[in-house]
Image (cartoon, rainbow, N blue to C red; front, side):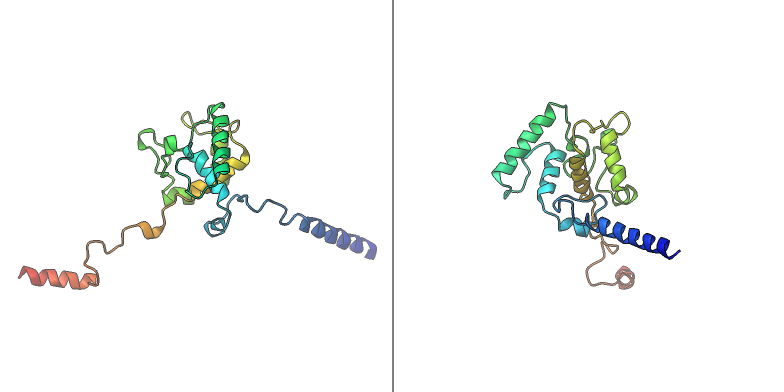
Length: 188
């Protein structure tokens, strides 16, 4: 019995050591699926620029500090994708992610939609398409490019601070209860 316990322990240690060898083996500049907003903000911006080009279908809106050779690479990438009938995402979902309501395109700015849709689910939708309107991109984009797009789409969510405050219309510094009292006084 002691020999079998030793074998199990040794096999367990070997498995832990083997698994540890692969930690950190991925390219650090590539985003992971399901990355939090905080962690993704620490990622290199190069993959976001590529995602922006894929989303918009143009290099016109890239940051001014984007290197010329990177822009040339993106233009070549877009030209190659156009030979495979690639339609940029912004055509339906708009550059700001708001979605074209006329064709019922998803509004990526909607916090509820962002919360209710997982990153793997978004990958599946891009790979396989949705319904008769959204085409499948499995033969047009690499899985890495699709993951870049998902990370880019996640950044469209509006923050809670963008919403109008609950006290909209109430003068600054005036508590709501004092406002009702001052209105009653003004009517007299």
